[in-house]
Length: 219
Image 1 (tube, rainbow, N blue to C red):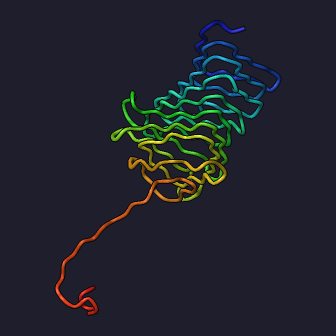
Image 2 (image 1 turned 135 degrees about the horizontal axis):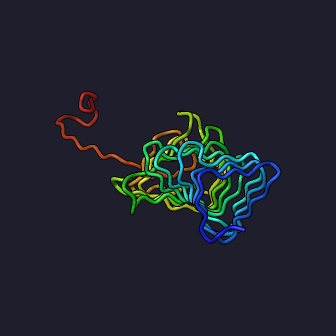
Image 3 (image 1 turned 120 degrees about the horizontal axis):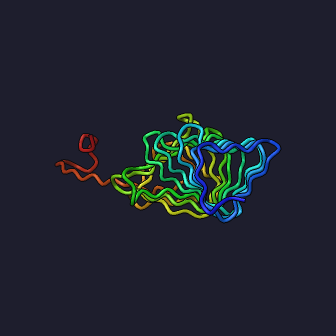
């Protein structure tokens, strides 16, 4: 049994062990799970940097909120784990790197109340199933999504989304709902599939004297 709030440095669940968090708040620098780790309720705050969450066992957090609150690069390597809600508030330049597949009911990155923008890297070739995707930046605090290998796509299967002030590259979202990013605030940095950034049109007006049929008029 855990107290209402538990603060720890590194939490290690060995192969023969099981940890069930229940309705608690768990503050940890890092978590290493080689056994069974189940979040049935409550909140888990990951505060450390480097390998913040590593899973080689069974990791299921279908009723817990995972908050990524590091101050430098946080590697999240969960090997197909299932989450309820993941919230990213890590504003470091290195941000968060998701190094393996996961599924989540919700992934949220909102910079409105933060000091700067957010950066998230997704494993090149990795597959991420996210039911509700919320990416809310501002004009000066952009949300940035990148592949761990520039030019190699990461796969996104999404059902519902709300996206503003987001810069995206190499995101292949063809397996899910089209992601709407056409409000004029988002950046298509190339390599994206099934993202709707809208249509940009240009109108050119010029004046020149001459006959309509003369080719030199249209130089």
